[in-house]
Length: 268
Image (tube, rainbow, N blue to C red; front, top):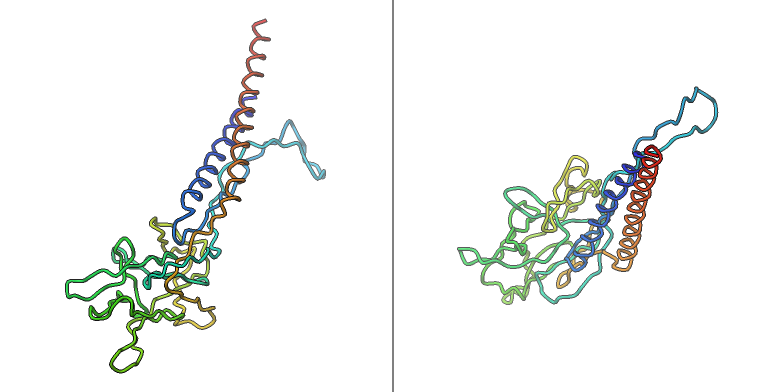
């Protein structure tokens, strides 16, 4: 009976983590570029019951010791596209990520909610809402001449940022966004603020414009990619997790009652 107490307790702990994950998904339902997480479970060790000799029988009597969190995974499916009309807002259709410079390190995001920040020389830099520079394929911050109005910026499907010169009528290129892909996106490490870090599991960042064989992403401006959280599905998952938590709690109460009855028999 002591085993049942610990088994049920492991179930409660696992379901609490599951509820935490679901709650985080629901909390980020309106977060730009957010990708939902799921919790994966694994069973704990099994114990053979009694003295069981080696046999050719296909099964033996075994009792499990509960459950644990095996891992958490992130779903990188496309989020809904929401129109904003802001020329510096961008969304990616495809597997790509924007490259951001943060603390002298490359970070990656699907959040294209960018702004223009004025520099000391009067020019503008394309930055995130936290002020981190957006990186071009030249591995430099994207800087726009101060004389060019933000409303004149044009973002091509390939990520090329340009503007139309009024004197010549020609389209002038400024910089191209550094859009990257990873061999294993599930290996990326979340770093907060919608940012991800490259890891050994994700593989190195592969720049779309420099590598053949990659399906190029499409960049859209004036829109943002919403989260891919399905509220109805998450609410169902939350109810299931809550019921599982309650059932494990009931199992603990039942095991406790059985232990009390066994103690009373001994005293009797």
